[in-house]
Length: 412
Ligand code: COA
Image (cartoon, rainbow, N blue to C red; front, side, top):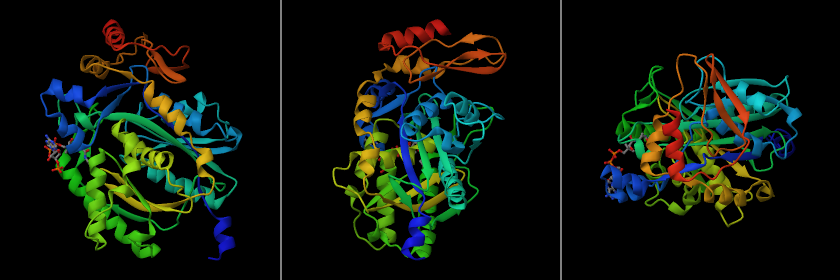
């Protein structure tokens, strides 16, 4: 393909938006209450803070808030398709994308649907979006990846919980990253992590999932390297799916070994871990929050640098792919907003976090108004006749941790 044709078919990220819940719990405090050495969470798992959604937040509100930021510099009337990737969806039938389409006031001609394959659903959405835009370059596709990671109080997975959303507009006028066209993929039927319809928490064989993750990395990298002709040295930075940040260190070490390198260079991954370390696992969003962390946090100008990306979804499907950072990318990112987002979050006591965790919506169709907590621009106001009700948030209360617990107690 000559350079002119390559320029014509370049597809990538035009805009990004990130949203995290307004509450968090410190893993040092969680360790103290659970009777665990805090270094196990801070060093062994590599997590500091865990984002906790309030009872009036769910994947729809998380996703809509992230999309609001992504759409700031994009004409909404040009959004042709909205793909919502999640594994903590709110309905077995109706897509979270439809609620979000309404909240964002997107055009009626915009197709809207949900996709699922564990944490890799967002990458499946990206592959779909790349093909859609390549087929018709005037299309713009909005991808929303949003999840709430739940493993159960007191379980080994608990410190790896978290929540968050990442939205990106994929188009033929990318301003942040253009994707390379060669991908490696891997699928195998394994039971490392799953969530039957009747459970609110995932069932996980954590140690096994780490093994399968590393195997899927080796397999998908092999295909990617074979088809692209790129080797390890062609990438200046690497982003990995981040169930917890230590996982990236394990993966990066393995990738180095596979490529005959004696040591791995952790500076190639560390800026990409910063946001996830203080958010926790956000399933479908985690790889792309990692990419945002890298692009917003690296002081070096990454223009023209190739970033290797590994997406893993338990069950399992994985993909290895890459993208090149575009000139001027920094002017389309918002690192200062991130500082504000993270610094104004409200700390929860472990007791208040547990109350949030245990909050349940009625299952009998009765009318229920969700107590108002600190949220973004949208909130789940309640349910009635089995219908979820969303609204624009009317206040941004700086609730103290004790109030948060009290509100939930009142709601119950
Ligand atoms: N100081 C420093 N490190 C410590 C420590 C301490 N006091 N105590 C334990 N560690 C280390 C362990 O050595 C281990 O490191 P290693 O992985 O390099 O061997 C790490 O902390 C985790 O501890 P371990 O006891 O092995 O695991 P666990 O039973 O707590 O489970 C997970 C850890 C990740 C398996 C569990 O959190 C989980 O199931 N998470 C959800 C699933 C998941 O994220 N899967 C990933 C693929 S998608």
